[in-house]
Structure formats: C-alpha cells, structure tokens
Amino acid sequence: MNRFVSQCLLLFICSAAGFFVPGCSKKETPVVFAVGGAPAEIDFWQTTVKTFEERSGIAVEVLRQPTDTDQRRQNLVTALRASRPTPDLFLMDVAWIAQFAASGWLEPLAPFLENSPLSRNDFFEPVIRTAATYNGTLLALPVYVDAGLLYYRKDLLETYGFSNPPELWDELVAMAHTIIDRESRKGNELTGFVWQGAQYEGLVCTFLEFAGSNGGGLVLSGSSPIVATERNRQALAFMHDVVHREKISPVNTGIDMKEEEVRRAFQRGSAIFERNWPYAYTLHEAEDSPVKGKTGIAALPRFREGTSVSTLGGWHIGLSRFSRHKTRAFSLIVRLLSFEVQKASALEVGWNPGRIDVYRDPTIMEHLPHLLTLRDVFAHAVSRPNVPWYSYLSNVLQRRLNAALTGSMPVDEALNKCEEELRVIVEQYSMRK
Ligand code: GLC
Image (tube, rainbow, N blue to C red; front, top):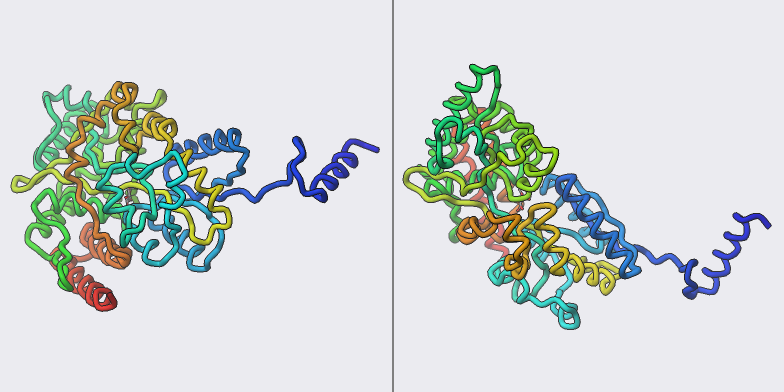
C-alpha cells in the first residue's frame, strides 16, 4: 500500500470512529474571528491567534475585513441580519455597539465572565458603563481605547525655532507656512497638515474635534439636534480653508484621506503635522520608518475660544448571538484580553489597552511614556451619540460635511441641510422608543 493510500485509510478509520487519536484528530469547525484595520494590526491578530491555537488546541480562522470602519460594519451587518453563525467573534467600533446591541446580535457576556479569569473590573469603568453595557447588560469588552492626537515633526519644528508644538490652530497654520516655505527653498516639497477628511466615519470624528475645540459640537437634545451654530460654522470653514485657502493640507483631503493614507503621508516624511489615532505612533517609530525618532505627540490644537478636544474611539470585542461555538469563542476572548496580549498590543501596535493593569507595567511606561502624558486627552475625549441609529446620523454628517470641505456646497448651507436632515432622523427614531 503506498503512503498516500495508507494515510487516507487511517484518516477514514479515525473519523469513522469519531474519537480523538493524537495525530489524527477529527477536524473541529474553527472559531471565526473577524478583524480589520491597518496591515500591521491584522498581522498582530494573526500571530496572537496562532499562539492561542497552539496552546489551546482550538482552531481559529481570522476573517480579514477592510480598514474603513463603515465597510467593516456593513460587512458584519450583512452576516448578522441573516442570522449567520459566523463570524463567531468580531471587533466593533465603539460607534456601532448600540446598533448591534439593540438589534439583538450580541451574546450577553456576564455568564461567561463568572467562570473565567476575566472580570469587568479589569477594564476602565466608564468605558464598560457607557460603551460596553446596553440596557444594563454587558455585551462587549474593550480591546483598546482611541482618541485623536496631533503628531508633529520634532526635528523640523526645532530647526525653525519652534520649541513647542502648536496649541492653537492658527499657530499650526503659521508654523506650517514657515516650514513649508523654508524647506521648499532647499528643494524639499512638504505638505503642512494631513488629517482624515474623506467621506466616511473618520470625517465625523475630525469634525467633532475641530468643532469641539471651538466650543461647538453636535447636540442631540429631545428631537431637535443642533449643529448649525456659529461655532461649528467657523470650525467647518477652517477645515475647508486649510485645504483650499491656506493650502497647507493636500488638495485630496476630502477625497482620499483616511487613517492609513494620512499615516503613510506623514511616515514618508512628506508632512509636518498629522491628526491620527494612537496606533500610528509605533509605526512611525518602526526601524524602517523615515520619521523614526523625529515624531512628537501632543494634544490636538484648539481655537482661541475653546479647549483641546479629541473624539473618543476604540474597538470592543463581541460574541455573536448566532455563534454555534460560544464557549470556545469566549476562551479566545479570555486570551485576547489577557494581560500578556493586551501588553503586547500596546508595545507592538501602539494601542491603548482596555485593561487598566497594563498602564502600571514598567515596560509600558518606559516604551510608551506618552500614554501617561496623554492621560488628559483621554479624560476629556468627546463621545459620539450612543444611539442605535447613529449610523443614519453619521451618514448625513459624512455627506454634508464632506460637501463643504470639498467646496461643492457653501459651509452655511451644508450645516443647515445637515440640521434639517438630522432632525428628520431624530424625530423618526425618538418617536419609536
Ligand atoms: C478609529 C476609531 C473609531 C473611529 C474610526 C473612524 O478606528 O477607533 O472609533 O470610528 O477610527 O475612522
């Protein structure tokens, strides 16, 4: 009998017998875990999952999703609406947990926690209370917390005599002009400020920061949302002007600029300032990065009348209600939220872990001192409205803000239209309660 035939025979006997024989186990259906993000983030999940498989003997399939949060949400919504049993586990943007919770797609986690080494006290209490719990039921656990930050080229600021990063938006514009001008005389073409302006969720986040740092923002009170205010108008006009009038931001800001486009521009060394989430830091500091050792981090600037504001972001893990392998899937959650993996995620991909004990770790403090420096940024971050129909609001904001940013609609008109359309949504959904 040749080797192939004998192996097939052995496999047949094992699977017919239906019991475990070392070296010829019956293949279990893998736990499917959906993740997205930057390539380095997906690599991190893949290595982490591999170690888990080796240690636990539980098979896992990593389902790769796009980088853009809206596309990731859409992808999952399609599977969950159809009650599909996979993915068993997925990461959820803090902006869409309420929708998933209200739709009944998430398995309550408290019963699983009871017999596990994890406890809700391991995580930031306000995050658990405001984002992970819906109607009193714990439905998600935080993997990492995000807040918008300002990255800047320490070396360039220093060369041109700026001892500190800008505190005001006007200062950022002035510094950018000086540096761009002087560097261009040396034949070095730079752009001033890269940030997320494409028509997607990231634009809502950046708008809330510009507006918030001018004392504005989005107010949802009763059924009358308020967005068309003078402070928001000034903030949106500023967003338009940095691209089209000051020309310190790339002309394609409103078309192409999402997290990774922004990060790559800064990392190539072609931008002076960047607005991004914390994950960009470790990538900028990587061995082969042209900006290694040259990247500074600060709180985002503000307008004269306002204070610095960051949008609160972050990703949680959820277990599908339709999963057929909930216990096995939960053991993967336990591993992913262990101290060891959370610490590795901070060091390797620069996330701000959801677990509190990681922040007390000496290695973390040594390698990522900005996590402590920026504690205030996290303490004052603004949340997006935590309502199940947030994606409808976001859709309106994305379209109208982007129209103003690209100049296809005047700022006033865009904000007025925004307010009208938001009102229709808020009225419709608050009546359904
Ligand atoms: C980051 C944030 C998330 C936000 C998204 C916008 O992934 O963590 O909360 O919605 O960026 O692009």
